[in-house]
Image (cartoon, rainbow, N blue to C red):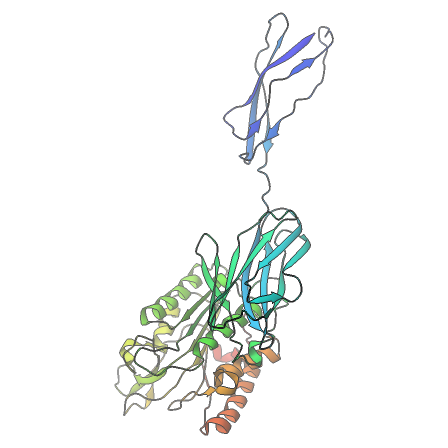
Length: 469
């Protein structure tokens, strides 16, 4: 006796493949039960849900059964995906550079024998492997990989070098987006091929790198500082003012410490070089917006600025004798405070959003731009706010030419590097003040005295704070 499965189909459900089959059954007595199986295959379009099937049987005499129904739950096929992020290039020596890559399994299954393949330009050769294999990477597991390259006879510092980083499976098939790091100048761009998503890769020029640019401490924290948000600005090239030496480098390397030492997600960092007034204001608004959307109550804000600064009459104050420090955008006309961003504006922007604490680091001059201003503008502080400025009122903030950084920024980074990021603000302030005072007098021949300022709420405990703890 032959029983034919006339039809089987998933009602209103896509992604299931079956075929009509003949079930060879020897004579079946009344009330007897026979068991057989049907092969059902899920296609690539299969999704999560419940598949309901109708089955109809027929036999040799032309009799058919009533439609029978059954159903079962389906699961979409697990899709592997490897994210490559936080690319950074720095120099180990004059000829040797290191490419750092963060790799994370963002898929839902274990990934075995993943390969990270770095395509490099002909101007360098790989010292070691340009392909590294990862035997096993579990979901949400991440690790950092280092690739070392050495310059050869084709290297030209004026020509950009492109490194393409591709995550592949054991057969060489891509299992994630290709990322690109560009070496060329003091900063480079990391972008996702095909999407144009921009981030920042730190690249240190070989002729001027210093000790704080190399061997940047790597965080040992298991998880990212997901609730820490940073705005980093380096204003070096001005339209109507003198350049600020190394301001771009200051911002680039501070960002590298944020990512590597404090494990702040790259997406949480707004990094702007040579910012206009509108860009600075937008950056401050974006920082406040991120804090407003963070529902954890643990948002920590960091603002870092390197560039021109000036003290001028407080445009928000009642008295014309009050002054405030202004950060000058690159499109400001001279030292015009009316086109610049004041500390008070920053405090006001942050006062309307919830945050756990805010830390502001300013490497900028404090020279007065107007005569007759004597009193500090009154700040409408709200929340825990700590400010560490590079110099006292009526002082300039110098550069440390031997280290290719602003004097304040160098000792800020050096203090963090020496303690591998595990340093509280009390000790941070102490070591920075000592270094800046000593070296500014020694090299510049004039005193530079970093200053701290804290809101009443923060004044009770800022000394115990740490960056992105």
